[in-house]
Image 1 (cartoon, rainbow, N blue to C red):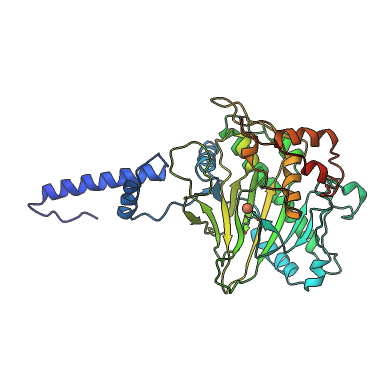
Image 2: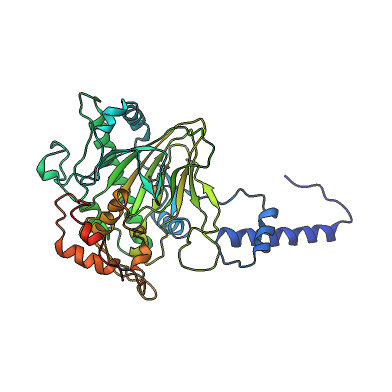
Length: 414
Ligand SMILES: O=C(O)CCC(=O)C(=O)O
Ligand SMILES: [Fe+2]
């Protein structure tokens, strides 16, 4: 619509135009995370900005491939978070089976508990960064035999993560079948996203097929966050980064409590360290799945893709469900930076070792949790050396046992 012309205010109009241009420029700089080192300028831009706070983008998987590759690469390097629509996964089909699982009597769930000798199963005592999460969960992963039809405890199903502990069909009819169907559809979607991420790094679309699509050791986690009336700032999950390559997350549409830390505008190309950055709620778009990149994507991409820090709040009255699918490489995979401009920033990191370390940390205190920083070229960490030791003795086809590996986990640190 045309604005009526006002006489005698041309100079005012010019001035307003240049102010609008300046404001737009500042907002664009911030939106693109161009380094702005002066906080007052940043605040000024925020105050003048009428646009909502920046949030991870929602991408349509039906978009032309080249545009999608660019958009995924941009989201992975700025946020490490995005949502996808037209993803082909029937997201509604799994809500009921999932809710039914958590409505089982507590002792039925407790009978499926994970242990220090088996990483898979039910738990309600997870520590994230040494703090107990306010939630219940069950992990279901790719069986060692890669055949879902075998009984969960079939000896050929053994692998580093242990054995699945799904409720029997008598206890929860149809749950197993629905879970396997959902797991497989997420595996396909994750492989599709990984191929976009590969192209975004200048690699062929099938670059990750051998280490991920064919050998993956992914697991689906079902989360239930009960209401937390305490008002004491308790978190559903403390700030953390996901360890694997990428996570495909279904979020409850009725309770929005997942938050990602905004990339710090420090001008540094290095990761943000958790201090300072503001939190942005990732509100699920209708029918969308949320995707975030993990530590292995960060190493493989030589720091071009970020493993974002995220957390889950509690809600005083609402319960919340979520289901992250952690798309993880094969245990033997040595994750090392792909050819990229500049020197490789990381030493090779073995996924099996990284996973075992994280799992051990859920059961005993072996000091600070392993991080990608431990593999940063030039870091003084003991992990690259411990990893070599681990690889000399590990058998990836037997469950990792915290007790068995205690001497190694407690190895004197440099
Ligand atoms: O519940 C959510 O929305 C996210 C869960 C999460 O970050 C995790 O399980 O690692
Ligand atoms: Fe997470």
